[in-house]
Length: 533
Image (cartoon, rainbow, N blue to C red):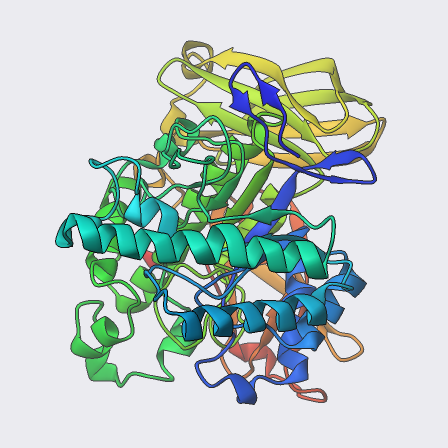
């Protein structure tokens, strides 16, 4: 839906007349060798999207038109599909043979996919309109400046024919009523998307490529955020599959070769120095790199959801990987959840408490995707790292349906009067009677400035269930970003990279990848941020 308003024009999907905030990620091929992707891998990926509270995947135009199985799984699991046509980051020929080939390819794929309930929209291409920027000489990626006036006219005519005539005509003829969008990002005819666009969709890369701070995710918010991202390394078990011990340095030749961005590994380290104490050990750098990525994307998602209904979509780059590599993915090539995917699961919860702090205050927002308003009680506690309650506040609140609302604002001077910010944390809880709707911890300083307990005293209690282990994790003092690994087994932890308050117990399920596998109890390794430094 696109409706003119005071800021420009809205851009959102509506199901049965109800506006939907789209929560999800960009999707790329699962392997560089497409035929070797198994049905189980497709099933696991879509199940992971559902588990992370996603409702949309964008099939990126640099990949391929996915197998029927992918769309069937999306249909069955309530995942909407933003479907790019397979054109990305390049200008294309305009001769009659090529154009006819494009037409036939479009007709074939629209016919094949049009009856899938999951198809939400068709998009002509990825980033070509903004890269060429035909109507503004000063914009674009420098492509058009390489050609003379006649060549530019010819190249743009081919673009216009494909993306403003052939493809929309194919969609209109083969799937009447389906929405077509010429390019992503795109603002409108003759207007190119910018970070300040008040219409259309935006790809925001100021954070990462532009080296802007994470807080800039709050500044640059469009009507629909269809691409943004931040990199991390895979976990150590994945890195071991393509390295030898002599390669265990993020600047080694092998690590550089397994990096999707030429600036990547050192860019990760640069951001890491701003937020964390950089670990000396290689394994610690991989772990903290994942925390860094999770922190970045959590900041972005919460900013986008706080801005609803102005912003009605948040699709980060990217959910998956096509080879074992450092990249922007939330799941690595072997479909291991990174810290990012665990963080996304929380950030996309239907009811969410999100906080934004600056130098003066901490603002607390309530966000709801529910179809009716929700009355609840907001409880805020300031705790020290041994679990003592230093101060607490409580108030009755109302969350409007499908909207965001400012619930409270607390001055940092008030918090500092109780304890140093380096030694305390805010616990936010949203309660409906005795039932907890959502809870979160808010850190008011970067992790590098926190005085974390040197020995948090983490203990584990294990119980073998049917095809899975049940793990109870407890800590004597605050343990930040608790990380579990089973050294002799690969599998899935229902929670990981989590913060644990003193005296509380976190119950986790571990499911081995291989049924019947019985990992050794003593091989379960637990650590937290302070031990990784």
